[in-house]
Structure formats: C-alpha cells, structure tokens
Image 1 (cartoon, rainbow, N blue to C red):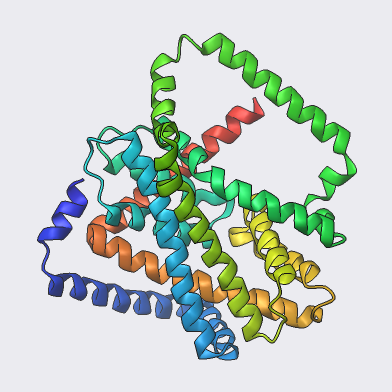
Image 2: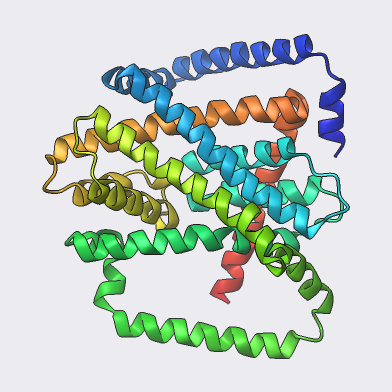
Length: 351
C-alpha cells in the first residue's frame, strides 16, 4: 500500500509534470523506432485515419461508455476484495488502476496476460491477499458476466449460421471427443481434490476468502451483480454507438450477436485482442444487415478507438494511483511474473 500513500503526498503539479515527461518520452521513443525501421508512426496514422471516419459524437460517447464499463467492472472487484479482506484498507482508486491496466494490456497482449498481471498486482498491493484468494475472486467475478455471455452465445449460435465454426470449428466437428475430454478433466479434478483435500487446508481457506461475498446474498446483489450488469449494459451500448456511427442498423439482433462474437474472440483467441478473429466473427454476425467491407471497417474502427482509449485511461489512472515511477515498475514486474505464471500453468497442463 506504499504506492498509493506516496501518491497522496505528491503535489498535483509534480504529478502533471511527470505525465508530461512521459508523453514527451513516448514521442521520442516513437521517433527512434521510426528511424530504426519500425513503423510505429504509420500505425498511429492509421489509427487517426480510422478515428476520422467516425463522427465525433460517437467517439465521445464510446470513450465515456468505455470508462463507465471499466469503472463498474472495477467496482465488482472492489466488492469482492472488501468482502474477502474486511480489515484491509483497500482504496477504490487502487482497484480501478489495476483493472484498467489489465484491460489495456489485454488489448495488445495474447492469452489474457493482463488479467494475470492484475491478479499479481492485487497480491502485491493488498495486505493479507494471496494469489489463491484473488484467483478464486476472479472466478466469482466471472459469474455474472458468464451468465450474460452464455445467453448471448446461445443467441449467436442459434441465429447466425456458421458462427460456431469460425473459431470453434474443431468443437463442432468432434463433439463427442470434446465431451469425453471435459468429463475426463472433471473426473481428474475430483480425484485430485479428494487426494489433496486435507493437505491443502490453508489453500482452501484462501480460496474460500475469494468467494466471501457470495455468503451474503444481499451484498452479492448490490456489490457484485448490479455493477456487473451495469458494466455489461455499457458494453452493449458501445456496440450500439459504433454500429450507428457506421450506418449499420442498431437492432437488438445486431448488438447481441456482435457483442457475443467479440466476447468469444477475446476469450478463446491467442492473438492480441483477438485481432483478425474479431473481424471474421463480426462480419458473420452482421451478415444480412450490411456488406462485409462495412462490417470489417466498423469492427476495426471500434477496436482501434476503444483499445487506444483503454491505454490512455490506464496510463492516467496508474500514474494517479501510484505515481509514474511506481506505476511503471509495478506494471512491468507484474507483467514479468504473469508471463512466468502463465508459462508454469501451461507446463502443468501438458504434464
């Protein structure tokens, strides 16, 4: 908790000066990369070209709605962590900055490494938190979002032909094999739980802490489900705003199918932000409502604008919560540890 405390003592002018120095340093890095043959400025130019295609009202609305979505999702985590560690001092600013950093990292890193980094940030910053506790908190946090996502997945697969095979073709072609693997994995987990139940008593207690909010239904409704539904509503509204900006009919069908396809692409894709897969899924979801070129332009435009804003928001919030130096060190160390943790878990699954 030393990072936020230090930030409280830092004068506002000094914080703004640090942000300005960071912006200037970023511009210098971009110039150096261009000289080395890495076309960073070209990517930025394409970003502004895409931004120029979108009406200003849509950009403003999209940015505000994305900020609301991120803030409400962070509020879900805030409730989970406060219920797990009622005696710990957990400022919402800390949780919001960590969550925003995770969203930004997931926009350009594969395998949801940003989420792993966020879990490690919570473990590092919050007194009494363990990785087992925050990981079980992640499972709890996914409950309302999973319910909403699954509802839209079913609607997508039942209403849009070919959507299941774009990314999950193997599952549709080998259904019996997949079911057998899932059942075998469940049986293995049950067996391992029975073997290690007594040996992992301390870990079980930590896992139970992560789900403490579920023990009080009213608190779970107010601090878990309501903010999650609000965050999801903002996500749906973002899709509606950008559909309208590109002249695509803003209907329940289009919003639901596009939101479901975006979620699937981000969940199962190994590419940063689900790039490529997202465009294919969106084109399939919007088939019949608009031509493929417009659907692709919409998908790229929304993804670029929202991802760029996620990075800006994360930098501002992390600098505000921890200071520029402390925030940079925190994110860098958490990212390194997240890669190691992710690699370790992949190796365990292979064995």
